[in-house]
Length: 261
Image (tube, rainbow, N blue to C red; front, side, top):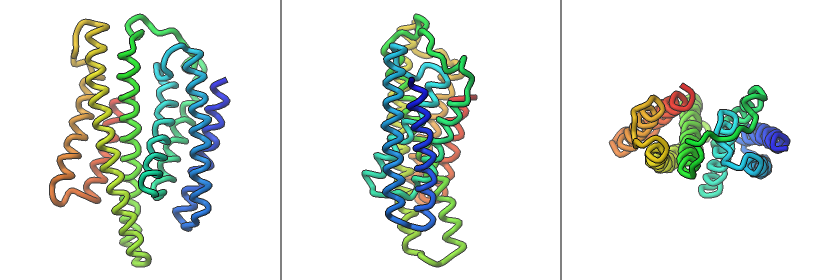
C-alpha cells in the first residue's frame, strides 16, 4: 500500500521539478505557485506512505537502503519547502525537486527483496536508533539542499558573466542562494552533531562502547569536520560566494561516501 503513495509522490515531484525549472527560465509567477502546489501535494502523499510503512513495520521507516532513500527524499522536500516559505525564494526549487525525484525514483527501482519489511535484530530495537538515524538522515537532507544551492549558485555565476542583462536581479538571486547555503549547512551540522552523540549512546547501549572507530563512525566524524571547516571558512574574509559554494559541493561528496561508500 505504501508503494502507491510513494509512486504518487514520485510523479508529483517530477511535475514540480519541471514547473520550477520553467519558472526559473521564464519567471512566470503562476508556474512558480503551481510548482509549489505540486511539491506540497507530493510531500503529503509521501508522508502518508511513510506513516503506512511505519505502522506495518512497527518501527521507524529508515532501517534499510530502500527506506533510507525514501526518507531522505522526503526530508529534502520538507527542508526546501520550509526554506521557500521562510525566504519567499523559489530560485533553487528546480534543482532540489529534481534531486528528490531522482532519489525516490532510484529507490523505486531497487529489487523487491530490499524493499521488503523485515524485523529488526535485537541490537537495533532501541529508541536511540530512531533518534540517531533520523537526525543523521535529516542532516544529510540539509546538506543535500546546501549542495543544490551551491550548484545553482555556480550556474548563475556563469550566466552572470555571459550576460549583463538583469544584473541586479541576478545579484539578488546570488545573495539569496549564498544565504540559503549557509543557513541549511548550519542546520545540517546541528542535526549531524545530534546524530553522532545519540549514535554513541546507542552504541554503548547495544555493544558496551561509545566509540569503536569503525568506518561508518569514522566517516561520520570526517563529514562533521568537513562542514565545521565550511563554517570556519565562511567567517574568513573572501570565503563567501563562489568559494563557499564549492565547499558545500565538496562537503556533500563526503556525505555520499559516508552514506554509500
